[in-house]
Length: 351
Image (cartoon, rainbow, N blue to C red; front, side, top):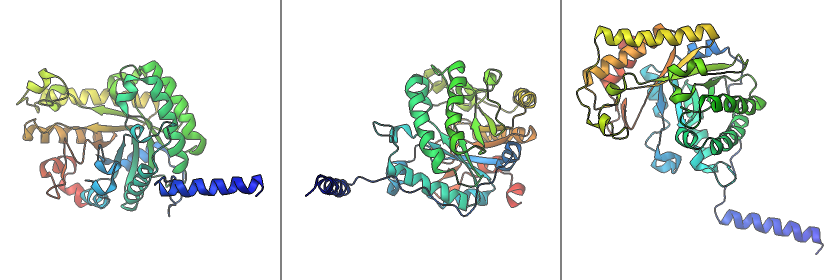
């Protein structure tokens, strides 16, 4: 045999062995029945309206057969009156040593995206690896750029109802200065394949509203700015186990006085003023009160945040569908009715 024939035979054998070993190539990019057409960021934000976070930590990311969240729930969400889902992706743990995404993980994401779009929802793809990024900005930079280098081209032809959220809650060692540099670098990667898709970007310090003045965005009209709201923290996180013994020991903290609502609306006024000054639409990407808070007050707080956001022109997404801060009981296959009613008043759902 010639050297060329021997080489071709070797390549064929290697491919066959890889197949036997279960090595899987990344599936082809999905095709969409609806073409991409640019949409103004303000119009996109208005269409997003009311949303909910889904798939955070779902076992389906590792094994689709174990998924708690089923694709059919997107229709359940749409039928309840929501317009948007924020798909929470911890992608870094699904990358190999060269930061290539696991093909099985990509295939699961494709399935979720297609099902959500088919259900008529706007889909926010949220890269959620905030803890690694807060602890190790250098490693975060490499992985975040690698992630969007793969995902942005994959979905470049998706309809405009697919939105990219660059990174959830930069904080810690990923300071405002570092984040301002990082977001410009990563946005350039996204823009190489998606020049007119809307991208969601929030400030440092956990997407805190107090950091908005330090957020530096490029001159790009297709950006929606996000912030998260869990104020007052001693109410929304009372009894949680992951915030230290003082917060864990709190119980029966109440919320709902006129002063409470005035404080919340004052903070939303601050966000609206920043948005007007910078000509940016606002997406309240997370809010919720943990189950250990008194249920009547959780209802009051949740409804006040949702209606307050709407009154200020913000779209929003509740944290979250399943797991904790729960809005839908998957085991019982039913909504947690007080929370759903707070988010989507019955008359609004009927419309």
